[in-house]
Length: 349
Image (cartoon, rainbow, N blue to C red; front, side, top):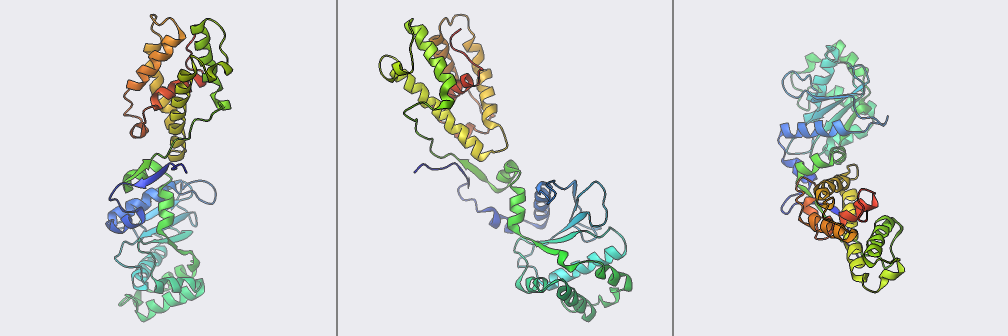
């Protein structure tokens, strides 16, 4: 079985879900900010505006994420970041929720659609059960804690004013939602490059597919040009059937092998960087690097140009390519045939 292309943590690097446990509060907020900027909403669009507000004067909103340009009622989400050593408890959450409702009463900001609790060690069982009991029950439990000054709400009963109670009654407690770590990681991973850099994830190239005995349809362009090279070299027609044996058989198979090396690199690029044309960028680098050599006037035949191109490609330095660390011996020579397939190179004039 061929090993597949994949992304793996560097040696000694722990998984992202464990790394976030080691973040400090500022790093946790920055991670949530980056993740929410990439989140796709039910509309199919990302947030129109995302800003980190954590710190003094944030009004109980660490991240403000708007659906549109303006901050308007029910058209934004609030993300509250809590990076504690244990799962979030009612005693942790209720004072923050009280601050939130007091800010709504003061009209510091309009009512959000959803209030997300973001905790790397998740919402604890006690708070989870209270939230899972339903919005009406959760609301009653919260109000009782405020009135009775339990769950870290000591000395706060006087702050439960009619205006604050009106804000509480105006909010659906079902919109207090736990934003789990796996969701944040999924959104953050939408920027693959930033995700890999943050968490020490590197690409691992799998095995290249073997060269098929019979040429495939997508090999047609460069194979036709190879037959032109052989025809010119022999000064008589050479067909595909002719290169299965005879003088050109070994040369022909060697060219197919390097084509498939580059094909493996292209597959790797598509698997690891699915939305980025990394292989196409590499082809452009190779084309730029070999063109002065291939166009030399002293090269008189197609075989001369082919050999010169392959030799030059083999010696190119393409460190600026993200694929550079994964290059294998036949990859850069094989890109010459991919360039022929794309009509960017011809051996026989």
